[in-house]
Image (cartoon, rainbow, N blue to C red; front, side, top):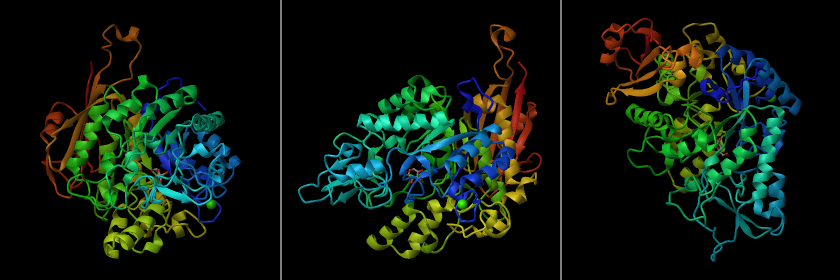
Length: 583
Ligand code: GLC
Ligand code: CA
């Protein structure tokens, strides 16, 4: 593979996330697999992405679809073999595409050898690999912490007579990162994958690895979504610096930490290059629903985020990390509902327009964009209406808890699931209009969204007006316009109720060497991009900046309607103007 000596090679890259179970099934068992991914590399090459992040493909009993790992150095046979993996890696590299692995080390599966040993007796050498505590004087768990999937975060172990901590399912016991042997073993495992030639890590809930001293109770919440109490613990950054020293700094990797609970200032601690921790983080503020109004059940009953709130959050992150850290940019992933259904409009009339508008809004910001499989086709929420159609452990446990323990009406709970269940993102990738959307010859492990006959890759790949073609163009622009990568972000008309508008300003060319440019470096022309996104189905008054820029000689760079708007922005219109001043 072509080597890149620049250490910050990932700054102008676009990442594509694959949820292997739902991407492409090569052998008809209904489960997507590694050979399926390999068979679709040309599709991804055509789209133009630089990096693939694979959700976990390791050995796992599958309680949380692979986020419960029982052997970090083996491939789940459902997905194939290590040979299949190696072949996929080299085929990807041959196309100039890099592979990022999901690193799930806040917890393991309860079927991991470490946990089997740990639970076997109190004096087993691996006892302290996990977080064990005595019951309180009434035999109850040591604190009120609840798992992110509902129910207590503590599970009683009969054999050894103690509770163990699991911030997620009871089959995902939390590792004890305070134990240096745990860190040694994790770092060894990471080095092993790096030696294999992988190109980076996406680190699952990495902000939770250091637990607060004394495991104090947090605020009480029904159903207890208290995993957040464990974010940003006291030794988090020292563990990440160790990881950097012992693993990350030794290879040309890209790293992104999934960081629930991180605000801008924490994100700087993670991503300021001089601190030598991670390259970027996934923050959650813009996908957590509105903070206006009260919520009893966390993400489930939170009102949706309005455009002004979304704009306020995303621009805060743009300003906050400028010159200090680096943003990741995402609207979709395997834990979130589909962005076109959530922030856009997935009705037949506006789906394509609003999917392109959202892509425009995100991809012109500063940071590294992430595309989740199917987002580039404008795939929509699944709208599954029966609980039997759901597969996700979080959705199933929450359904149980809300209907049985909290006594909420079935209808209400199904409404919550339809809006924000993780299964919305996990229905099979829609390749073509043949049975099962071309995903599998067998019976898919989760139902295909019936709209596949219309929304699918085959129908879009050669259509220049498709969502796919639009993403492809956005990626091409990022690869060719330095201002898209490096330019400063500035919000325009911050109070507008319909239009999210901003500007990027920077140099029009990659910095040439000093000699060529003279001392001032003034051979770099200035480049400006003005981005206007109408988030509503109504027309919006044309922002003054549009006509001003056009009069000053700017031209249309990309948009989701043909030509320039006249007098007003059309429903869900996205328009980007480019204003290039030769210096
Ligand atoms: C992360 C993953 C999610 C998983 C959880 C526990 O949030 O993205 O899918 O359930 O961690 O590993
Ligand atoms: Ca398969």
